[in-house]
Image 1 (cartoon, rainbow, N blue to C red):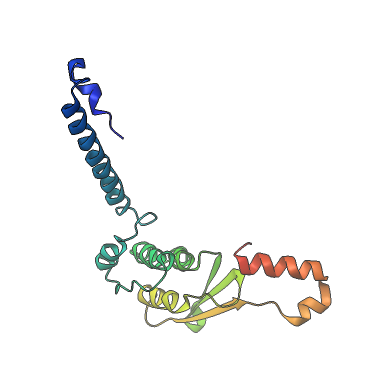
Image 2: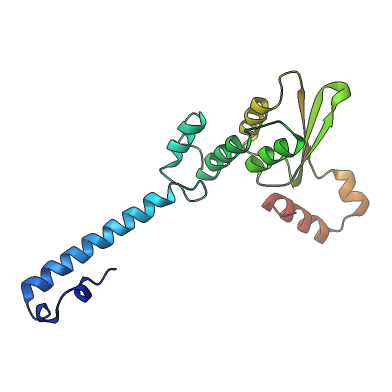
Length: 178
């Protein structure tokens, strides 16, 4: 909070009306500072909340406020990263922006395909449709996109895992660990 009394001469210190006036102004200035700070947060995707709809408009993304904020942020980041020449690194960056995990991208030019493998988490990502849409927008139309997902198979459990290893693996992978 701002201390406006420091800007006034000392003879105002004992005048009740001035004290009340300055106290009210300090409160309003404090609220104004909070509003300014909140507004500045909207200029950065990682801190934006109500400003995400403006980012989505800039990127040409339909606004869907029912989606979680993290998903909306990842769509915006992906859209912004997806500008430029399409490279394996660009496809990887876009996919990882949505997935929030590690992705491997492999070009298969002989069969006109790009393989996207989700490696750091088990199962299908919750926002797979968003990932597919973003990648379809940046990958040339003549290339197919194949998605591969990691799963914990029964043979892996029987061949090499104890119960404690199984618990550690599933907790790490489903919780988003490596």
